[in-house]
Image (cartoon, rainbow, N blue to C red; front, side, top):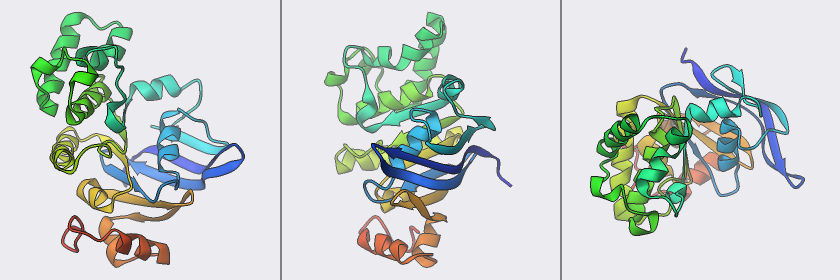
Length: 252
């Protein structure tokens, strides 16, 4: 049985008295790409933030590599987990190089080690070397997203969490980055958790998909399971609502 890098046990979270997630129990297998999917407001992003300790559960337990995620362990989890948000979430006053190296500099890496790692990541993500000394506002949307990915990978983390990383990009750039990201995930073999609302994108990336509705897991498994073996009428409605050129029975 595949080891679970992240686990949630009876986890619930609410904001201003309104439930946002759970209670749910979920395992995120190590070395695989798990895609969290569902309509807006279903709890996808909240679940991602719980995994990395950006928010604490109201009840239940979140664990990372058998360690409970809490205020005292969150730093360790974040050092071992890369986090990418839409449009990269870059600091505008830092160059691309400055953004990518921020945490490594904070941890006291020497300049040669930092520069060597940045060169490796620029090659991995196909980021132009002459763009490293530009500021975010001087980069395209696709380039900013690559910088965000490089920053997340800088410390060679065990896992990557990505929250709608391609949502702000135009379709052509998004299609190119989808292919590049999938190749990177496969080559690195890391545990990846990716949030999207797009079933076609989920089918493209996922080893395993988790469909959420109103903060609860409706179905999890292969994308083909959602298509051919729906466990709830909502699954069928969700799939049918998203039928389009990206989704076919061959894809599923």
